[in-house]
Length: 210
Image 1 (spheres, rainbow, N blue to C red):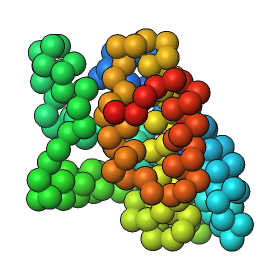
Image 2: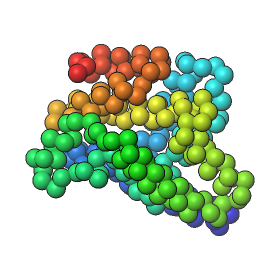
Image 3: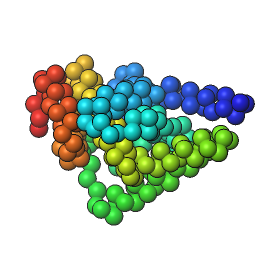
Image 4: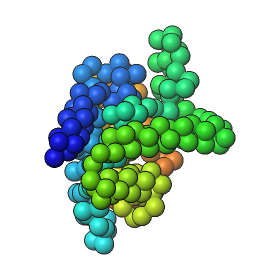
């Protein structure tokens, strides 16, 4: 029980860790990683219920709860980090675009992120009971690789939570760029339920698709 309490104390840090994507966009009082995880989990539950009655809901929700635990030690990273200018004007201009990389560069960045986050989760869970530690790692790997229907769906639902959050920040502050999120969504989402959800977000926030 001593190690479990230490684990709970460690994951509590996520309640105080702001999401980097909003920090680099100068959003005031940005959401924390724990706040993102909370809504992403609820969204996965509700949207999956509409999509697929065969979805293993327990597995999906556990995966949602685990997916960002690694960031306690690995930190929260974005695609922009390796190319983010120090100059504020150049940074603002870059953040209005969706970053493009060669296939080789995308693979290199993805592998670097994967290794760092896997090591972070291993460090976090190393003293938990073996069965629990193995389950958390298995769920995280499933999410990372999109191995199962639950893994594939949650990868999209996770991005969709960020898409909704971007729309909310834009509603309150029109300087928060929307274009990158629409471009990402257009390229990555093909699930009918999530596409319908995107359309509703567009309607709700009166934002025309670029």
